Image 1 (cartoon, one colour):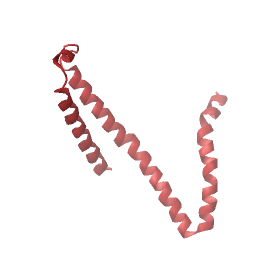
Image 2: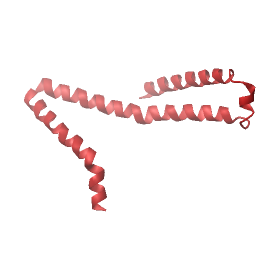
Image 3: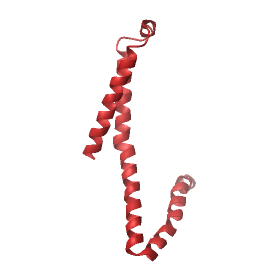
Image 4: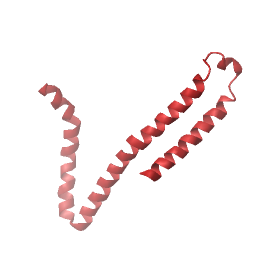
Length: 108
C-alpha cells in the first residue's frame, strides 16, 4: 500500500506541475478576476483530493476485486465443483447488495 501511495503522490506532483505550467499560458486578464492565491489554492487542493481519493478509495476497491478474483481462481483450480458452487452464489450476493438500500428503507 505504501508503494501505491508513493506512485499516486508522484502522479499528483506531476499533475500539479503541469497545471502550474498551464497557468503561465493564461492571459493576464484572467488573473484579475480572482483573488490573490485563489488559483494556486484550487490547484493544490484539487490535486490533493484526487490523490487522497485514489489512495483511500480506488486502490482498496481494486485490491478487494483482485483478492476475490484470485481466490475464486484458486478454488476453481483446487476443487472445481466447489468453485462452480461458489460462482453460483455470486448473483445472489450481487442482487442482495443492490437491493440492500431498499430493505433498509422499508424497515424504517
